[in-house]
Each structure stands twice: as structure tokens, then as C-alpha cells.
Image 1 (spheres, one colour):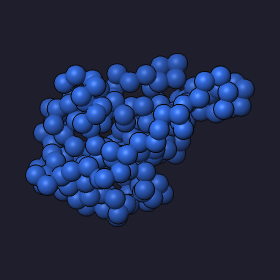
Image 2 (spheres, helix red, strand yellow):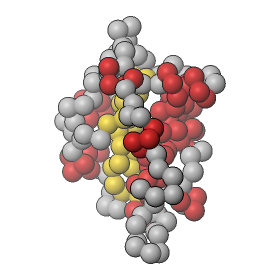
Image 3 (cartoon, rainbow, N blue to C red):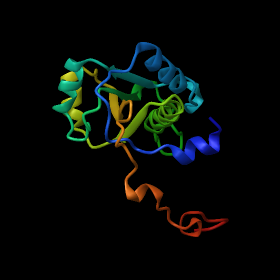
Length: 172
């Protein structure tokens, strides 16, 4: 798919078929995330794949925004393996994790898999439920699967603020 078409057509899917994703599809999505740029190429992302009925049921205890998706990936970042900005100590790993998630969302759409980027989850419950080690922080949840026949973007998907409200040249 051409890039312009891909970024224009992709939307947050909230209605899925019940079919789990085949391993080859999961691998293709993970490979796209693996190619994402990270601060100094430290690659602090840690991705938890949830693709069984049991793991998805456990996920439901951590978020109400699971949209009954049959599969999900929790994108985390290891703060101990993050590039740190020397001026203020800001870590690149939270941003790195979101860049990885974006690459994965775009590849998923490219191969016919719908995703929804979710931040509305309980990170403490995620940590406990899935045994996430200290220093590894959940950043984003991608619920995913094949879109149902009635899947469609929310009305707000097509509404963008004017460019002159969000882009500035030389000064704010």
C-alpha cells in the first residue's frame, strides 16, 4: 500500500472478529516495530504479545478499553536501557516505545489487521497480572485483530484542527 493511502485510511478499530492472529502475522507486525528508530539505537522496547483466550481474559482485568479484541500487544520500555538527555535527564524510552507502537500499527493496517492504541489501562494491574519486572514500564497497549464487517472509524477521526493552529514557524 502506498504510504499516503496507508496513513489516510488507518483508523482506530474498536470492533473485531473473534479470530486470533496467526503467528506469521504477529511476526510481521513485530518486525515492523523492531525496525523503528530509538534513542541512540538502544532499543529499550519490550513487547508482551497476548494472543490466547486466557491472556486476553487476564487483560480485561487491566482495562475496560479492550474492545473485545482477540489479540493485543503491550509495548513497554526498559528505563534502565534508555538514552538520557544530558540537559535535564529526560528519558527517550517512553517516546521510543510509542514510535515502535506506531510502526506496528501502520504495518498491521498494511496487512489487513485493525488496531486501537490504548493508554487507558491500569499499569499497576498490568505489572501484577503479567509479571512485568521492575524498571520495565508499560507505555501503550495495542488491541488488535481482524476488523469486523461493521468496523468503522469514529466521527472524530476525520476532524483535524487547521494546520495553522498546530504548526508554528520560528516562534510560538
